[in-house]
Length: 119
Image 1 (cartoon, rainbow, N blue to C red):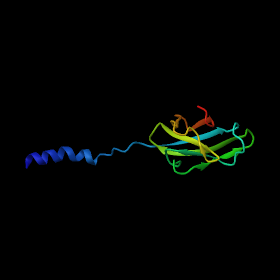
Image 2 (cartoon, one colour):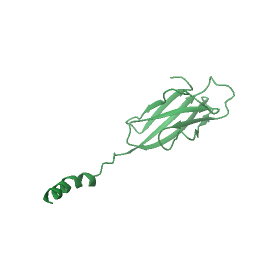
Image 3 (cartoon, rainbow, N blue to C red):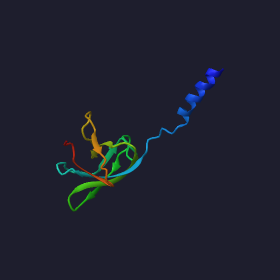
Image 4 (tube, rainbow, N blue to C red):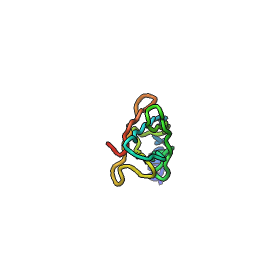
């Protein structure tokens, strides 16, 4: 009985300590150059971490001054990166290939510029 009590006294604190990773707000401004594509009707982004998702594309808006598509997204995460892919006219880039890895800046905002289907 004494052995069980000692064991519980040693193990119980392990379960009661907080093991949650600290999270940070990470804002990313994604800019996509899709100038090589013709007849663009819709440009979007999919991603691994909320608020993005792989199951549903988030639409990007056209910046008419430089003919690129943009979206600003804020992640609440403890990770140092996220993964994304862009979608143009319902065509997912890099089909059956690795995702784009976006490394978060240590500063307030990360600026990520990409060209559709180009590494």
